[in-house]
Image 1 (cartoon, helix red, strand yellow):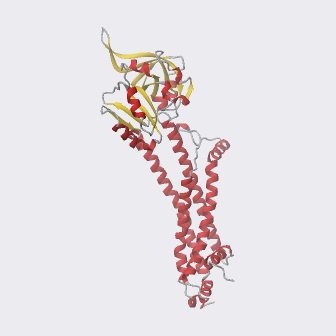
Image 2: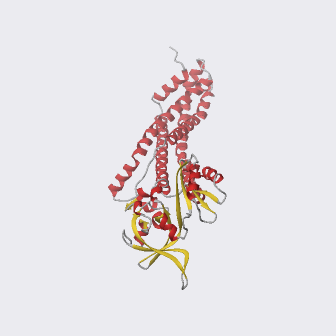
Image 3: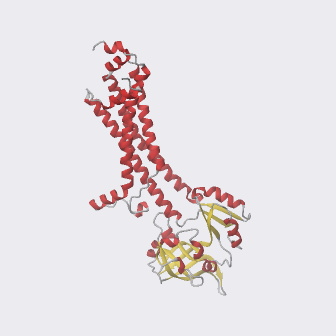
Length: 417
């Protein structure tokens, strides 16, 4: 009975057959396990990095502006009309006015520089997640005329302030009095405390007040400082900002988050690329072992190859036999690594938590990593890319040994048999 295709049949038989040289079998097993380890580690590490990226983005963009529109003279009159113009852009999902500027908070003999932002509580949810970040109070407590203020957790701790306490807010503008020019300031009541996480300074450098109170504090009348804009895809912020700038009056300009924080996120992506490249070398090393095992197998099977050649099997069929065997080893290694990587990636958080609890240690702290646990986010495109790389490396590793097998001369191989 003739099996078709012949190369596939013989290659699979060689894969299952017991070897006379057990060292070859051992090297093949090591190659397969090496590929599996490389694939599993790469999938897991990429998932963990995806998890960190997601957490950083959530914490950063929970309060950061995707796009901001300001006036060259630092004051926007008739902002309601401008808001309507901006909202016409199909990428825009939320627009809200704000009043903002540098200020000094003074309490109990301590002074801290912060950025004070006046917001409209009824519109804030359309551009940020401030209300979900409240740990005491709510943004609804920012009622016009009451001069309430929301502080970040670290800022409140530094000034030893709690809800109900008073704090002086001093701004760079001056007020004219009969005696002299004095700094403009107002006494505010702490009505809430928020926490957006460490890393971007929100908890230590930001304070929020009502929009109307902010206009009085900064002496803007009915004007606002700018418009905060939230868009559908934050990675389209550059093109959206350019489109908005073209459709608003020339006295206004639009900026996006990449102009201030783009380098940070570019660095994070570069780190992911570098780590991916380095860990890919694990798979490359494993495929070198595959080359070694196949070369030794060709040497071990020279008499078999010679017999096949004398029976009329063509060199290209011999080449295909050993390519099939090497590809099967790579395929099995990739499959094992895929299963292991998915299991590890989906359970990375629980595994690390268990290890930390078992040894009473803390590997991940929010002071350093923004979160106090190991996040993991498995993405299909990462899994597909890693598996494809492993299979390609495995296929390439079979070319030279298979070529050597196809060059075996029957007379030379059978001379000493």
